Image (cartoon, rainbow, N blue to C red; front, side):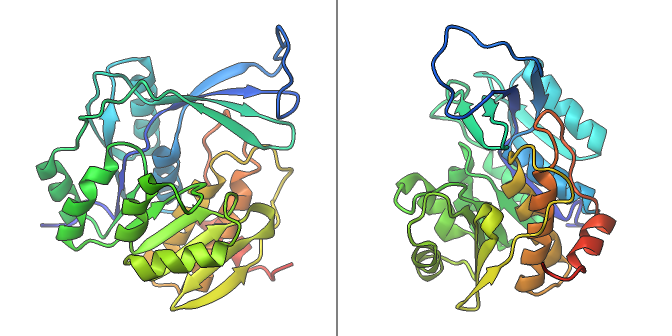
Length: 302
């Protein structure tokens, strides 16, 4: 079959309501006045990865369940605006949504609405097979029901990546993703020993590359059995919001990998894209472009 896209992104479509709060944790009060406004926009983890890849010039196809509701309309409009192919399967429970409280320092607290999913939700196997056969890479988000698609994807032979986000190394929900993917991203935020968790992922699963992002402290890269520290890239503007930084890192890393770059260069791309994402207000969806990414990645490390 002729390839129709470079990357298939599975799952992670949804809508966030963004609220800028004076501090986190937010002290109890009867009410708060939100002068910056309360804004709702399309964009969750799968959307952000798809946007990041598309901004870097890759052809992307996104597959997920969406409701016939205003939130689903926002997601569809976002993909049309950015020229990203979207296969939206019906979700009677409604489109995934969340509320993000964002502090002045850019930290985020997310409240996820888990009512917009059903235990029996599945992607049709024929749809997953057909889309995976037409791309060179699949990025699988950890949103439900992506775990059930992993065996189908593995049988296609297409390379897989996933992002475990703030996995603590123990929650069993994340393990099928961690051990099925060839490239695994995760945050080091909940890990007491990132290297130990990264090596366990590589030893028990298929991953030849594992990356643990550590915010302003850079990232850890495990590739070919060797652990390397990747320095953080300086943000090009003041940091206003960390939302989407990990997704931006993953998208830029995958861009490098699909371009044939070695893991250290891919991680440098990721660091630059993640730093850029931290300068974009949560109410907007704006990924770094290819020329800016390559230019900033070529600059000497601080």
